Structures are given as C-alpha cells and as structure tokens.
Image 1: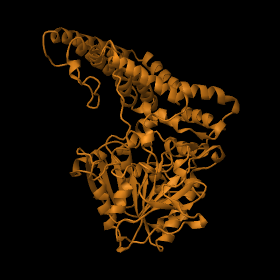
Image 2: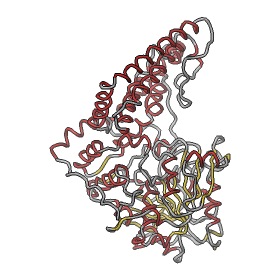
Image 3: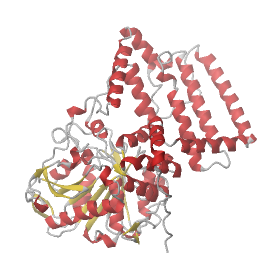
Image 4: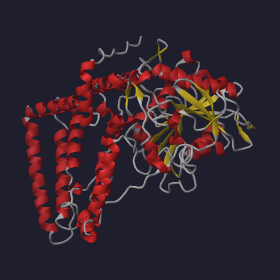
Length: 582
C-alpha cells in the first residue's frame, strides 16, 4: 500500500510577505536561509575534519608550486599549462589569453576553481544536497570575480579599448543604462518587437476550436491532401508560452508536422492572475489534458490520439496516461515525452533550489499576489548557467560594447508566464521534493497513480546539455512505464535541442542524435550503457519522430478543413487570445 504523501506545513503568514519579497529581489528569488544552512553544514563539518583540512592545505601548496613553475617557464616561451579549462568554458579561449601576464592569471584562476571544487567535495557528514548548494554558491562567487569580467585583467577588452579609444566602454555603459531602465520599468528586452506573436512567430495557420478558463485548443490547418488518421495533440509546459514549438516558419515543429501530413492540435495555456491562486495540478490535468483530448477525439471521429508533451507538459501527460480514472489511457495511440521528467530523484542543477527552505520561501512570495512571476523564476534559471547567461553577456555587452542579436528563441524566452500559487506549491512538493509520481504516491481523483500503467508505445526525447531535465533523469522512464520505449538523445540543450529544424535556414549543421528502441522494462540499467550502444545519426531528430508517428498510425485519410469552434466561440484564428496575455 503506497505511503501517504507528505503534507505541506502551515501556510505563510501575511506578516512575512514584505521582508520575503525584499529578500527575493535581493537574492534573485533564492532563499538566503537555504544557502546559509548549506554553508553552515559544510563549514561545521570541515572544521571538525582535520584530515580533510590537511589534504586541502597540501593541495593548495602543490597548486602554488605548480603555478610558480609554470609562471617562470611560460615567460620564456610556450609550455603546457597547469590545468585545462572545462570543455564548455570559453572565457580564456581567445588568442590574447595566450600572452603573459594574462595566461598566468588565467591559470591561477583555474587552479583556484579546482581547489574550491576539492574543498566542497568529500567532507564527511555533509548532506549531498547541502554539498551541492554550497559548491554552487562558491561557483557563483568565483564566476563573479573571474579575471575575464574586469577591464584591467581581460586582454580582449583592453585591446579593443585601445583600438577604439574607449568607444566600447561608452557603448557598454549605454547598453547597461538601457537595460537597467528596461528592468526598472518591467519592460521587454530590446529587439523583441521584431518577433511579434501571430506575425513573426506562432504564425502557422489554424483556429482556436475550444476554450475554458485555463486553456485554449488550437487546430492547425492541413497543408496536404491526406493526413494520418490519428491526430497529434501537443501539450506544452505551463511555465512557457506554447510557441516555442511554433517559432518562425523556418523553426516551427508544428509547421513541419503539418507539412508531413499530420493533423496537429496544440494546447495554449492561459497566463494566470491573482484570481487563479487556487488552481492546482488536478485543474491543469482536467481542464488541460482531459478537456483537450476529448475535443480532439470528437473532431477526429473518436479515433485515438498521438499525445506529445514538452517539459512539464510531458510530466502532466504521463500522469494522465497512467491514471485510468481520467479516461486518457484508452484515448491514446502513443505517448511522446520531449525533455520531460517522470522521476525527480536526480533533477540536475535545478534540484539545488528544491528543499523545504526554498519552497517555503517561494510560498511566502506567492501568498500576497497568488502567483509566482515568471521573472522571478527566470532568475533561478539564469543562475544555473550564470557563466554563459550572466557573466559572458556582461563581458560581451558591457565591456566589449557589443549588442547580442535578438533571435526568435531569445524573444520567446523573454515572454514570461506566471504560475498559480497552489499548483506551483503542489508540483514543487509532490514531484520535485518528495518524488511522489515515480514512487507511486501521486494522487488523481483521490487514487494513487502508478507509471507502470503506461502501456502505449513511448517516444522519449532528451538533450545532452539539459540543465532543466537532465537526460539521465529522463532516461528513467524505461524502468517506470510498462511500454516499449524509443529513446532519443539529441545534441543541444532543453530548448535549442528540441527546436532543431530538419532543413532550410534554421537547420543546424552540427545537430545529431542517438536513437534506440527497447522492449518494455528491458533497457540497459545505466544510461551510459544505453548511450554507448545507441547509433549516432547526423541531422535533426524531427524526421525520426515523424517516421515513428507514421509507423504507429493506422491509415491515411483525406484532410478536412478546420471546423468551427466548440461552444459558440465563433471564428478565432491562431494563435488565439491566451498567448497574448501579459
């Protein structure tokens, strides 16, 4: 008998809100108590570990000797460095960093980073979570004070400053002033106006055919004479606008599917406000997945549906597919999960922000307005990859005086959404903190859900550089669902890996993926073992998914125009109204 899910503590006090809001703005949405507890745990156990202290002292002395020898030799010509940066660390890759004294400075910084990594690991008695949070906090400080972030210690910036007579710094000041004014006014980043929803992005023809208080359902107009009999229903995450999957015509997965002869439907979530504070996970399940699926089947003459979910939309679909009380399992032909986790035991770096202190902090923030603002959530995501999203941008725009071109993907990323207080608390506690779904405690309509109830063919996609849904975590669906799984590991990250056009201007020459199909519960136990045995394919994964959908479709039927909306909505053209809400 599954254990009862852990109950949340008492709700936040209204008296806490002003201080909590001030701290949230100061700490970019991160609970200061969570970070301080982790640091105290690490420091306390390190203070009681003289053996570890001796190891660190010896390591510091060894690194100092290494650097001293390197600094002397490198003054007289080329010689191997003491330490190599991580493959993704491009801060010191420019040719200017190969000249003294900058190469010595870079080596000293990299050795210091390595020493701090040693200091944060292997301290007996420190919990794994606290160890990871403490190491994360140290990385933030180190990244902040990297020599690449300052004019006197960055040879690229110095060279450009001399060459332009300081025009780059003047341009950087202008960029910084403009960004600060935009932030204070809660405005949009410069350049987003070139990607208007419905004009430049989200412009695949279609109509809104259903609407309720939480979701619109879009049906896209066919572009082929015949279509697969089983339609495709896509459920995006509610923490993002749906048009990540319908960007420009060159980058649109929706347009690709329609062009390949699929009948495509898309859920567009409403951007909640204070009146929606009590919407919960079950509301998203019933008003989103169940209502949309019922409408799609009604329009497809009762045929089963290929259901696809992206990120948390995939998690929600997994819950629906495993819950017979929703009626969803009998309506599905297949299930596709795009960068979607079902087991949250190892959620990657996002898990750094998931503990009781952090969740209570967020609940206090949401108590006043009834929702979490997307900008507050974006701060945590930026910190996960601060080296690229914060400090590299600082150098590029504020020290070099350049402007980062606005792209459709960046404009979409700036189109933030809000999260209802009740739902956000439920999924953080139930999914992330307690892992109730994978462990059989998550309840729908009062009954626990087991992912072993998923028996339809599964297509599960993950990305190699995903900070939100690490691929090794996504891989665990093999051992949770009682279904054959076609697993795909694609190049790129959580968004750029999914948006991977098969041809045209948006196609990525370096794109590749690995793919293999395993019978139910028969995949290799270790993700790396699967990776070593899966063949590597160059190009976009989109054609592979299209071929898989077609292989699981029963027939080709004549395409029909998009019908009228349900419930007397009249004619509402795609992209609908909900996607425009701010």
